Length: 194
Image 1 (cartoon, rainbow, N blue to C red):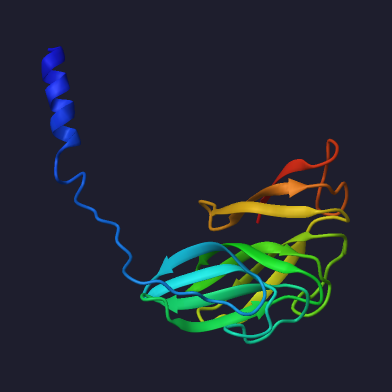
Image 2: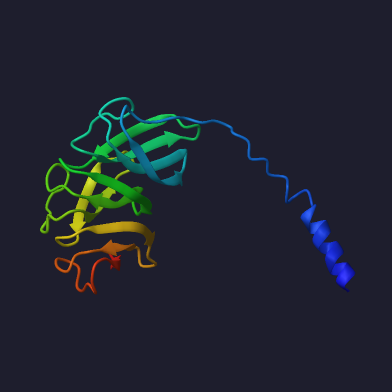
């Protein structure tokens, strides 16, 4: 019996289906400007991809920057050509950490903002960084945005779609006020259901 199991394991390990995928470079692109660009998420969509992150650049592939760093969305086709790009933010630093599909051919953008001007409509607790969520349409137009957090740093690490159509955000917080109901000291893990 041991020999049969051993032979089956060897046969499975050498089966051509297991080794049939050759990951060779089909294309590559460099996207950005003269300063730093930091991508953080990619979402495959029909005809291409959305890439989100942040940029410090004012030139190159970046059409506009409102301040220190801006949250950045790039839509590329299936071979990496830029179809459109847009920056979002204010006079301080912003970035997008995640992009998730939303109803109506729209997308949720989740990140952080340190601004209270520009695209940020209202920050009731303008502390360090706050959680920033926005919804854009399929060509990057801002539909709405919202700041969540308190006076201290509130950061996103990841997010997922909830079964009811909402979004669950996972991150950490140093705040003890605003939308943060309790903090056990220093920085705590923070879950937010939107």
